[in-house]
Length: 281
Length: 281
Image 1 (cartoon, rainbow over the protein chains, first blue to last red):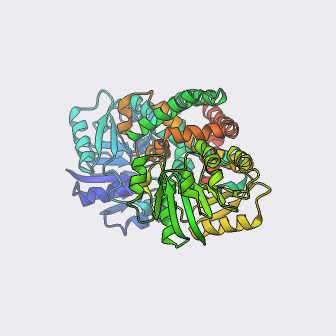
Image 2: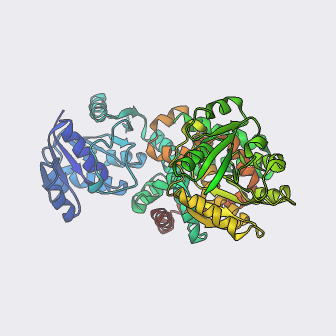
């Protein structure tokens, strides 16, 4: 499908992607660059890695697909850095959890170049980070959202759709703005609620944690995610995230009112609405 | 350990308990009663069941331990009903998720009788309900909270502690009031947040759910729990639950303010506090 794919930033997502690409034969060569020298040294021993470079510019030379797998705040700066080294018509994508800002700035960064940036967000991952947790089936049976701006060709969309589809993902196509609204609700809000719940419990008696059960462990698993990564995500999507928080607060207020007023019907109606939604996930 | 144990209400918890008791040889006989005739018929075919009775009074006759495993609102009414049939010095316990109201009312219900009620809350369970999901290892490696009132003898406490301990649980002893404060935070609050998140997402575009990932599924698993059971739990513990909601709301307000003010340090501090707590669970 591709002659050479460059993975910039082989962390959990990047290294898993490289593995999956190699396993499914989606590229003749997979090459990479990582900011940290220790990480570059580690790449040399990975079966998915055909070459590792000391600079991102060297790593993208000659590739027909470049996937930027770094934290969201460094995606566009990296794109600016590699622009002079990109071959004509290179397809560039990413795996960032936010899209509006990245897609808009990527367009500006590539103005006058024939390369195409097409944002992607595979809804896969884990609270764990790093190449050592990579797994080639990370993307299977999960959703992948592509967020083309208007000027992205249908050929580029078809090509990147087929790429993620072959990795086992269900591909959807929405605008970057709609993407950010959706993930503010189904991903960023759940994350910050889990984190806030843990933050609140941290202010209570320290021994209580030993009395908790599987419910608390499951609902808060994602709160173990990397705070630096999540800070960037929440900041880049703060408008939509704030709207989602406010919608949630209103819903919580309804439940609180029902409890205060001993309104059994109100309580059960809300619990049933939640169960109906969850049972359909 | 016991001659005969009666399980009243062999649902997920009751039937799992009966299985575990039988497997570990904690009683010579395990007998049961269920409100529903279909459920009583099902019990006849269970390897853990030595006898099933048509009334709770018949089921408790001759038992030295009775464990009431019904929804929280029916625990005390059942205790009132079985009182005339209880042998002298019977130990009665339960597996209810709330304790203050139950323990206080149980004391009144048994006044003048030599039987002892000692509340228990094994922190095990599942979003699934019913005997068909029972498993004998449900209680292993989980916490169990015993909530004796002042007049409960240390012999009774020691006996019931040993019972749950033998089933693989880590037993803690706190007052009923402290129990309700603790579980409002580590169990009831996580449950209602998961349910409220689902209820809120149900008000949004129906197609978004297909774009969610494992994070949403994990954080909301418990929202599939039985609304009738949870309504009773939230109502019986509404004072502590409301306090826990308010504490959570304040914490969420801090994060919202940090996001609104683009206060990166504030955001990261809160995410790190959440991660630190979660990593220690």
